[in-house]
View 1 (cartoon, rainbow, N blue to C red):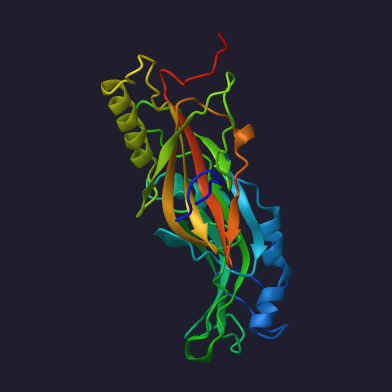
View 2 (view 1 turned 60 degrees about the vertical axis):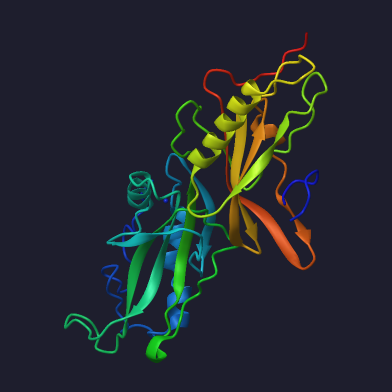
Length: 299
């Protein structure tokens, strides 16, 4: 568990002017150099495209120019592009309710035959892929360095990852604050009271609506069962939802409930180590009740 107090249990950047004999992203001319995996990984145009890419509005860049693609949670399909166009990936991701992150990269892939306009020694293509994910893409889960089908070496270059800063706000809640790879670690409020109301765990596709329902359900129950001492019931007005990752692999979605809203300044919980395992936070968002955010006020 990621809380010490609780028990354990993609703007567009195309390759403007291809270098050497690269004429198109699908075709890689080999006349002036060896058509090898090492040559592909060292090709400067791929790094240049990745490093010069601008982060699209509404996204956070999580890694840049890796020689590996994501092996993340919640695969949501992919498309191929004619240029290294991060904004195109972002637009397609934003248009899908199943996409919260994407990974764009060059992949060295085999070709069955070389076009007549290219040197016949070419055996590879450079395909630009945009892969969509329901979960976070991070350096930790960028583990796919390629494969060797039928003796051909597939490798990855210029790999960039991007995570959506916002997801659709559930009804009755404000647009979320994106907390990146940290969870809320709330202190006592302005009058020294604890605002923590517990947490729930969900599996399957990441969905903020699950937490909104949990928060609303807690509030309704507390109002229906007020404290016997006559004090005001503590109702959920804020929640933080995130993915918990174990050694870079998503374990579950956690929803942590609070009676008051908190800002990004207290999102300091990035995880912990236990035994030989490392638990971290990914895809963390915070939502407040749209009509009553529960801001602490001293009497």
